[in-house]
Amino acid sequence: MNNYIISELEKAQKKMSGYIGLLNFRYMNLCVKAEIASLLPVTVFVDGQETNIEEVANVNMPNDFQLGVYPKEPEQLSDIIAGIYEAHPEFKMEKKSAGAPDDESSQYVLYTMPEVDKDRRDLLMNAVKSLYDECRARLKAIYSEYQKMFAEVLVKASPKEADEAKKALDGLNDKCHDMVIDLLNKKQDEIEEAYQRYLSQQEEKQNSEADYTKGIRMQLEDE
Image (cartoon, rainbow, N blue to C red; front, side, top):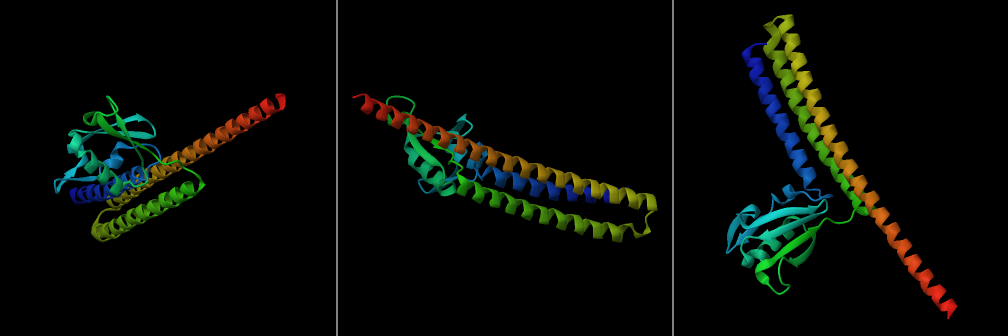
């Protein structure tokens, strides 16, 4: 392959990789499990100054479904809460204290990801598929663009060189398609896993309530 074709293939790969990265970022922001990256879009206004959250807070993941947000300056906690709410109103927030309960200097916020009941499962599944379709459409458009370009450029090329360029472009397209399919499948599996977790918790709750009711009934009968 000539240097021009190699250069154009690199450009095509860069464009496709950009859309795949965007899809992955969007999936991370459809929060099922906790994702620290989901806080990247958060903007915090401190004294009227726009600030990124990493500049004003430290974040950790105590488990797969929670994020702990610790302000670097205690007085900025309310601004941080407002910024996170603007980006993720679905997060369940709880103020905590790393020290004494009334010690404001040790307060932080614990965010829990919302439960995935049937309605949320359906909503997430539709969103995931819609974002996948959008990404695939953009990748197909890039592939078609470079197919046309190569067809025009390689008119006078040798059959071997034209075949190599076509195979390289097709290989890039197939690889990118596999990557977005993998992202789609992983996100759908994550949603389904969270939904099954919700169903299991509901069943445990119902069984516990039934056992409690049965115990009360037996106690009354004994009396």
